[in-house]
Image (cartoon, rainbow, N blue to C red; front, side, top):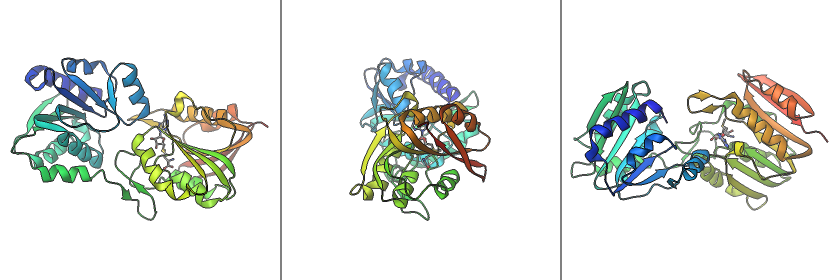
Length: 342
Ligand SMILES: C[S@@+](CC[C@H](N)C(=O)[O-])C[C@H]1O[C@@H](n2cnc3c(N)ncnc32)[C@H](O)[C@@H]1O
């Protein structure tokens, strides 16, 4: 969530207090726990969030949080991203959530294409609210007779699961690298053993690519824990892995890995850990995944992981594992096998 866009939105609402529905319902799409949400204190605020860490922080601060988008709201606000499909889908969800007369507002920094997205939103109504400040734009529409419902329905359909080219797997906007197979993950799969057995986990599983490949390669897997913070991704992983449920115990965990895992004594872990949190590159995030992997493995358990070759994973791995082997360095990625002390 861009802080500058949020500040601009709040500035705009202070200039247009009539848009704040006193006693009415406000929906904040992809909300984060921020002091700026105070502007909505005269209304019932519903924060929509599918990312577990943000969901928990909002709940901890007393906000009403929902992973599903509610309906019949009087004002819906959304801080956009640079992702076109994700933004258009959220335009659809946001406008569809409105009660009659309700207003949808999006705020975006100019450098993420605010002008372009304002023109996109204008396709659904001839009456567009528009405000520019701080190198950001706030733009919006009202649910009235001018609204073209068919355009909104088209945006909502952008979130429908779609097949990823060259695979049997489905994905949708809002998921990390949603439209393709990650190059690093593909490289890791080339170096996965074909006899993974017993109990394993896929940390930061996304739409389930590594789990799907591990289960396709080996018939000996008895139990697999699919762990992912993004709710949209875990739902997709359930769809993509359903065919294996007959022969393997599958457990899906909508969890922030960094917050700690209750799993123990696993035989193996696979992962392609995240290193981005929004626009910020956080090397420590991947390091925290390494620590969690070491905690949930049994003595002698194996970790197979891939990471960008410029990130210093090897030293973190050596701090937490007895043996570390670089299996390959290619295409900007390193693939490691690490074994926990027996
Ligand atoms: C590099 S992607 C890999 C996705 C998937 N394993 C693949 O190979 O396509 C990292 C994944 O970690 C998830 N993630 C990010 N932070 C997380 C956290 N704190 N806990 C759990 N998952 C997280 C992201 O949503 C993303 O799906």
